[in-house]
Length: 548
Image 1 (cartoon, helix red, strand yellow):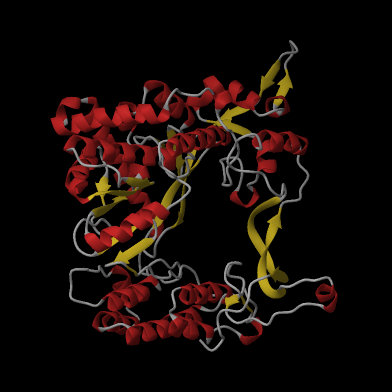
Image 2 (image 1 turned 180 degrees about the horizontal axis):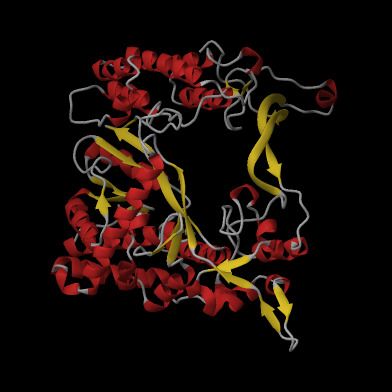
């Protein structure tokens, strides 16, 4: 069996059951309780279990119980008798109704209480200061994102393909299409044609966004919107520009460590509250954006968004402003939630130094938790009470879960297991000094696939005592390090010759002038085509023993 060969369903469940057994021995009564359900193959019961951190279980018991749950809660290979796509679509339509009600409420501002109106006013002033003057399209760092568009499949998505792809946009983007195209050198001319009067006409088709589904948990999928090509380019430029403005205001959306550090402190002294929202990006209603953002900015974002989407032949006029798939949604929600949190603290005369936001992961002083929750509710957002914490010893934010200062974040199994997945799992446990669990994982890896190497070079090898190698020629030249072997996945390349290939060099130069995403291999697209074993030179020495 190769490094990437998937096991059978029964083979994957055998691994899950054995790891669960070891966790039950390392934990306590709670871990044993969940393991009993695993033994009886009651996987949905384990997946649905809600942890109450006020119960008198030890931290270790919670840690190993959560690890048992993580083995089945986000996988995509067990049938829980749930139509995941139908659940996601139902949730999407429910959020549309929420946004509709919010839009009505905001158009009739009198229905909002004076405290919320005060917070909204302060938040709008904060947002105006953060964003500054609205940029022109020429000022935006335009570039292509890595994902699919309505005219480009995900398996072919790269900049070279997108330069040649059919141009599509939403109807609200039409007024600035020419300005957008001319910003990227040569792009407009490539897609233009002569008319009888010898004038140029750019061939652009109108297109709605397309609703699509991606994996989320064992019980539901996540809805995203695949955007028209031109919309996505403008959205990417806006999102990158907004990220820079947020960074200037002290909000770094490239680093989650501040949220993690604050969650850790909150789990120790209770001074910090962490909030998580349900379907946050799907509940940013149109009127909330127009109420909070300066009009020029709201107008720019409104032009870039898809106002209508299609699914199974049905067209929906969106009540939400943007959704997952829109390249500025993450920055927009971060901006809005930060401003609301800051405004609540300002209104309550609370020090806002500890406010931190990363998407819908919000951190505020504990004293602001209740007021912020009410304001968020008035704005159409729903606080996920199962993942929000202001009392007790537990806090979670940005993938960091702390119980009284102890990191109890588990490793999640998402797909049918291959040795490649076991390498990642083994190294996860090694880095957390869970040596017994690491040994259990190691016992399932096929012996011919085993490679050891140092930490810090990815998970293509097992972290452990490796056999250093150095040729005589290298020794004579004065090399002091050694080499070790690791596995690398081979990237997929889309080599078909395209009409717009000649544009790629000028696009690369343009993007290198300021966009956040740098072009790499012009032929590489998403996916892998097998793997290879390679040697890496390092100065690192052995740290771990294979007999840990």
